[in-house]
Image (cartoon, rainbow, N blue to C red):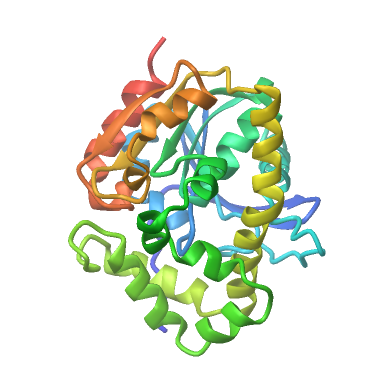
Length: 301
C-alpha cells in the first residue's frame, strides 16, 4: 500500500475523545464553524476538493465517523449502537463541543447525511443550517423500496444481513468490491472522477476487516433503529426547522426516488435544493458546482 498523501495541506489533525472512543478529524479555515460528514465506502478525504473553497468562509471540521477512516471502532451492541444515527449524531455533538463549537452549520453526504438530519432532529438548537448530499431520509428509502430502488441500492439489505454473511463475502476481495461499488455509483461508471491519492485512502481504510464489520453494523442500524426512529418522528409530525438544502446527483442514488426535494419538504417544510451534474459522489465528480451551491446556501443571511 503506498504512503497516504495529506490532501488537506494547512489543516490540523485532531484525535477527539468521545463516549465511543477517539474520533479523528481534520480542521482548517476561518469563520463560523461548518461540520462536514462523509458517507459509506469513504472517509473525511471525500471533502478534499471542496474544502479549499469552503475554508475561505468557514472553520471546517471534517471527521471520520465512528468505525470509518482513522476513527476508533467501537463494539456494537445487540441494537447495533453506536452505529445508529442517533448515537453517531450525539458523538458528533460531543466532538464539536470538544473543539469549542456549540452551534454550527452542517453538511453530510450519504451515511453522513443521515447522521446530519438525525442531528438536526435530535439536537435542533445545535444546527443553524444544514445540507444533505445525495440522500433522502431512511424512512423513505425503506418504505419506497420498489424493484427499481432495490436494484440500485441492493447493498442496503445485503449489508444489513446478520453477521457474518456480508463481512465474510466482502473480506474475500475488499478492494475489488470497493472499486466496483464506487465506479457503479458514478455518472461515468468508472473511477476516473477520483483523485488517485484519495482512492489510496479509501482502499487503505476499506481493507481493514474490523472496519468492514463496522460498516455492516452501520447498515444494520439503518434497517432497525434508524428506521424506527424515523417512523416515530413521522408519526409525531416532527420536522427539521432550520434551513435545509438538498443536493443530489442528476444520476445519483437519491434521484431514483423520483422526487427528492418533495420528499425532503415532508421533513423540512422550507427545504430547497436541486440536482448537480454528477453521479453519487458530488464533491468529487463535480466539486466546483457542489462547492458553489454549498457556499451560496451557507453564506445566505
